[in-house]
Length: 249
Image (cartoon, rainbow, N blue to C red; front, side):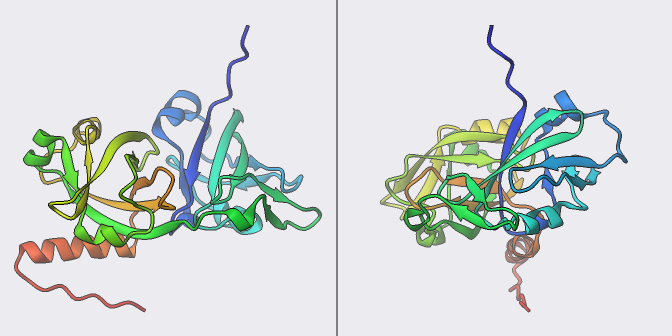
C-alpha cells in the first residue's frame, strides 16, 4: 500500500518576499486551520540543526521569516518547497534559479548550487496590468502590453504560461504571439482563470513575470508593493484624463 504523501507547496521568491510568505488556501484549510494562532510555527532545513520559529498572521508567516531568509541566504528567484510534517512544523528545501537544490556547508551557511555556471538568467522585475473585460472573457484571450516584448522571461517560442494567484494556486494557460498586433497573448484558459477567481468585468490584476526565456514563465499576481501600486495609480489617472507622475527614491 502506498504511503500517503506529506502535504507540500512551493513558493518562488519575488521582490518583497522578506516581509512574509503566504500559505496556499487549499493546504491551509485542509491541514492547518484551527491550529493555535499565537503558537510560533517551526521551520526546519538541511542548513543547520536549528529550528526557526515564525509567527503566523492569518495565512502569512511574518515575524521571524526575514531572519530565516537572511540566515539561509535566500534571494529573489530562489524557489522554496515547504513540506508539512504535522502540527505546525514545516521542512523547508530551497532551490536556486537553475532549479537545483541549494547545498549548505557547515558550520557556517554557505550557499552552493550545482551547475551554477550553467544556470539560466531569470527575470523577475517586469510587472504589467491586466484588466478583465467582457471581450477578453468572451474570446478567451487576453493580450499583454506591447512593452512585454522586452521582457527577458518571455519568448515567441513559448507555448504556455502558468498564472498564480495570491493564494498560490496556479493555472496552465496557452500562450502565443500575434504578428499582426505585435503582442503576446494568453488564450484557452484565461476565461477559466477569471471564473475561478470570481472576477467581474473591470477587475484588475498586476502580474509579476518570472522566467528565463526558455522554460515555462510564471505570472504571479503581484503582492501589494510600490511598483504595483504605481501601475494602478497610472491606470486610473489615464482614465480620468490626467497625467500621473511618480517619484522614486
